[in-house]
Image 1 (spheres, rainbow, N blue to C red):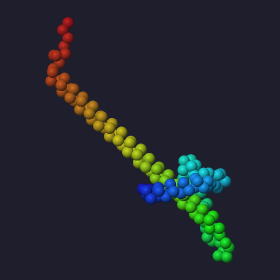
Image 2 (tube, rainbow, N blue to C red; image 1 turned 120 degrees about the vertical axis):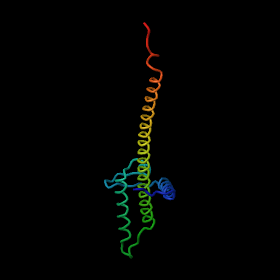
Image 3 (cartoon, rainbow, N blue to C red; image 1 turned 135 degrees about the horizontal axis):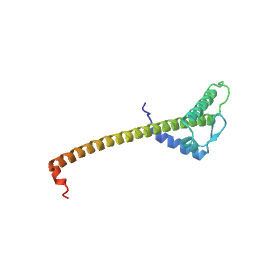
Image 4 (cartoon, rainbow, N blue to C red; image 1 turned 60 degrees about the vertical axis):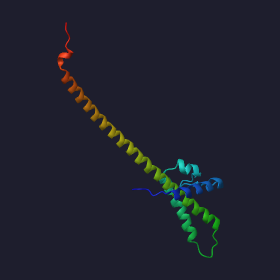
Length: 146
């Protein structure tokens, strides 16, 4: 399955990461662990990121589902939506890089296999050439006179 992570996604990811970094945003896991943006990108697994994203989606749904007469803090609402978008983009980025690394690894493995096949073919040709040369000279040329 090809991951569709475009340059536009990457640009939006960088924008949101910088905002989160300068705003000092924190993210909480289900177990209450506090994470920053760096940790989300470099240490947290995709499964954990999905859990964080789902938790943020639940918070958004709760805020959207409130009674129309209850005032919702729009800045908090927008912050949660932005965090969810950021986590989702990090998931896409990680999946894209994982797929890219996997494809590069497969390409290297196939390249090595092709090189080994080519080396075997060249070795076989060299052996045949050596045998023909040896037979053309004759064995008399290699006799020792004692």
